[in-house]
Amino acid sequence: MWTEKFEIDKFNQYNLVEGKKQSTCPLCSHMRKKKKGLCAVLNWEKGFGTCMHCGKTFQLHTYKRITDTKPKYIKPTQKMMNAQYSEKLMTWFKSRGITKDTLQKMKVTEGPEWMPNVGKTANTVQFNFYRSGQLINTKYRDGRKNFKLVKGAERIFYNIDAIEKTDEVIIVEGEIDALSIIECGIEHVISVPNGSTTMHPNLEYLDTSIHLFENKKRIILALDSDEAGRNTQAEFIRRLGAHRCFTVDFSIMTYVNENNEIIKCKDANDILKQFGKAALIGLINSAEEIPLEGVTSISEWRKEFCQYLVNGMKRGYTTNISSLDNIFSTYSGQYIVVTGRPSSGKSDFVDEMILRYSLKYGWKIGIASPENMPYTIHSGKLLAKLCGKWVKDRDSQHEKWFGNALDWLDNRIKYIDPQEGAFSLEYVLEKGAQMVQKFGIKVLVIDPFNKIRLKGSLNKDTVAYTSDYLCAIDEFCRKHDVIVFLVAHPRKPSGLDVKNYEPTFYDIKGASEFFDMSPHGLLVHRDYANDLVKVKVLKVKFAHLGINEAETYFRWNKSNGRFSEFREQITNPNLAGDCIIDNSNYFVEAAENDRNEQSIQVQSNEEQGLSIEENVPF
Image 1: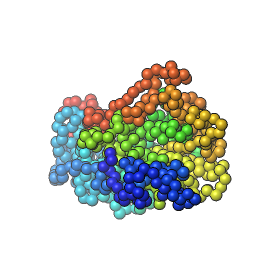
Image 2: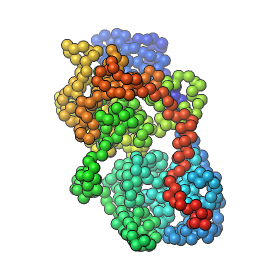
Image 3: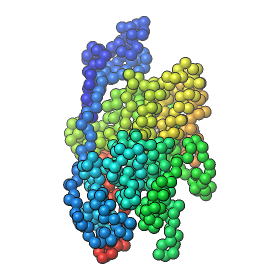
Image 4: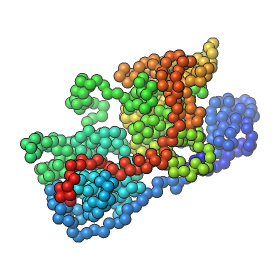
């Protein structure tokens, strides 16, 4: 077995004859007239069986996750608290409105540290991150506004211990903002460890502390009043629930700078410096509720509306596969139906898309897939796509990139296990909602439609059942701002070439509701004669997101399961140019070192002009 993350819990759970390649089916044989018919094909090496009668795949064994796979974090050395700070540092903090008492209370330290951005040791202020009284991480800031965290240490909220027993929490974007609010006598404030970003926010530190938010009645989001801050605020609201989130807008307060310019306040420290404690306390206490869900007016999206009038609608999320991105993109909060003949590569191409979304945007993925069980085998397929080759030899398992790849998969891919041996849509969406909150998943894969049933509508006719099913998925997407991939098989053709026929949206099992209700549809079609895979846009809801009926061609790469696109996309596959072959390993040591080097730079140096030592504030 390639993975070390799972081990067999119960061997041969159905008590079949060990080693036999054929057997009765433990799922359906007891309900058939020919109860002893050998209708199941068994693969003992891979641990699963497939029934030729009911079409279901089942695990021969049960598996359990090995529990000691949590990341091993480095812990920084405990800092000795000095009774005194340097005069320059105290002058700087005084200019920010923060006193020595607050610094000592929060165990802020000062001392020399090597800073990679300037390539030398510099005097730094050190913000120490504690959890349960233990030092977990330290953020260093020098006088030139370079930042770094301890490499290999866990990232957690700053001042996380302060909210363990409170029913309210204030979340800010930096340690200085947290100190500013503590200076006002309000202690239940925490700061994110790595600022905000205009890309998809990485809230892994929320994953490990989500239990601390279960009892919170009020969550006040006092993040920076810029695009990055609003982006992170939206993700917190998505994860923690709009019903208990309140927001603070610092930009409503303005001041005049030394150049006689009117400046909008950006954060909590701006308010403290310019207007004092009473003003900051007043803004926190007057935090506004999130608008009523489901009811909006133009005032709430006026900025986006004005941008739309000038620039048109922004493009949707893409995969970095140029030929596909030219004809298809999507927004979150929508679902994508993927269809195609059996063995056409539907699930495999969905894997390609979700991995590329995760690599590009940092998204986490939830998967509910009877089609891909056991998940150990499916994870092996994902590993090959990431590492550029099928990993079959033990020597690879000792390479650094192998461990990095497993850690990446463990962090980004979350599987939903069946409930009592089966899946239902109600159960999958319930688990999906929990994974949004705990892990922040942005994509959920349901594969396939016909094996994950909507139990509450089984007694309805096909049209009503399909309508209920798609409405449930649509509601889930909108509520949690998630993209759902729904893999749906077509009906078997009648009077046509079964091997070569190309299904349409209307051929999906479940009537025309799929075409009428779905915002997006993709066809994955394998052309055996030309060894090609065609991906066709069956439907795209908005014209700016793609091109209806457009198509692109790929060749499946046998070396790693990736889909190789052609340099020139043309309609005649016999004339197609060379494929773009990619066998690179995304987790080679050089790339990992480069990422690690970048990760310690939490924020860029915004004051590169301060090159003279005397100009550094501390």
